[in-house]
Image 1 (cartoon, chains in turn purple, green):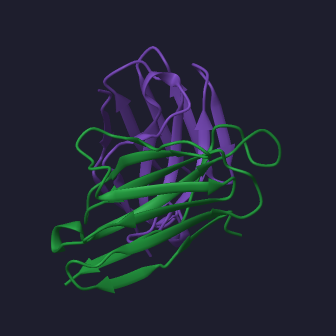
Image 2 (spheres, each protein chain N blue to C red; image 1 turned 45 degrees about the vertical axis):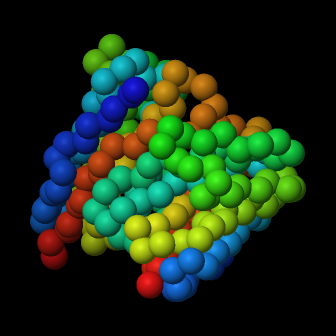
Length: 112
Length: 119
């Protein structure tokens, strides 16, 4: 079965600083999803990456997919308190239209 | 605004009772919905795939008689936890998969989750 490992598990960043979260898959990535969750709440869709080398940005968040490395990274520029939360990467095993396998998440805290 | 509505958001029940959780896609039709379970400080684990008009597909280790799923329409899937016990206490989240159009194809939109506490 596919496993997704996220690093770091937790991250404390001073407001205004940049940060990067990584997601590494044990198997080939056919697509990679990034979500944000506040503890005990639902998931907010951030981005979906489908092609090797693909890079997408939304506001101050950029995600890249390195298919060869079976890895994706999420980069936040000039972090703000609103960025605080748990970031989850998810992938569809085998690339089909199935349920997602998720990493354990990265808990991001923004210090004012 | 939310595109997937989940209800209730929180439920407390006595051991042995059954609890029904609803998941609705608000502005798109979802032939496929998914049910996940999340334990405190852990990630989401897929429980089952709910397909409109057909039987749900359960992940290994998930009891289909314990967690009844019904997907009777293109906008509604329900999860019923039957004869709930304290070990069933958890956070249950549904998602609906978008189709082409305004909701991106293959993007899963999640509900806000239901926190179940079984006494």
